[in-house]
Image (cartoon, rainbow, N blue to C red; front, side, top):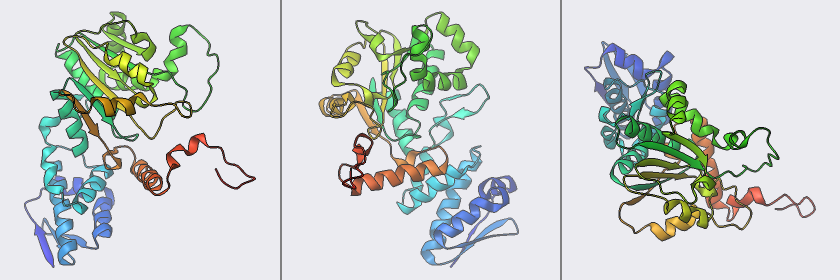
Length: 336
């Protein structure tokens, strides 16, 4: 069956097809169709289902391109995945109005998937939001962009970023330097996001004034945090007591985002995660939202999405496989 897409500009065709038509070829392989250009029109041939799916994907990519987006491989992979779930029509939710801010290099920061859009909408609407999902889904980065935007718009008076200081499976020993030097390695991902979105000079200036604070979770004890945008990162590594302590610090005029990946816990074996407990205890409270992101929302290199999905499939098939890191291999019994 032959389908035609007309009224597409040369720039949009170039953007959607990719360099050397790499995206068009990928779509052809995925759906078993053939895509050709004739007289400024896109012609799609193949079976009824394959040609319809190919057209839906190309239509969605063209709409994204017309809104000024640079089409990347992640966009192509994501829209093809949505098409398989019959959800490409929902792509219109990712409009220009979803831009949160711009980096110091001028690149727009905005949700790239429907899961990310739901996450940022919840942050706008709710006082406390839990963003739960695998690495690469933009949980921390988007929360940071929302915090910086609120700070620049004077919706809050300061930004507080915190995470538990727990080694990720390695003992770092006694680090040299003062107290700040010792905790900086744990907080480096937060600094990286701040530098990229806000710029090093602006960040340093606001940090010296005490308007931006990056600190380990232990520093939150005994404080009341009013008129602040507070982000707790790596929440899966908190204990229930730490999570309760953190949540009871929140004061008037504050907004809180808590991010975590339940598949990457670095707590000691048998310890209960504060994120898991909070999920059970707080789920029915108004003004608290739990947003779950998946491998489909990964916006890093496409290979990362495949890795996350492979681990998800493996852990679903093999009971207890999520705990493999804590079970050393026993060569004598040839098992874990």
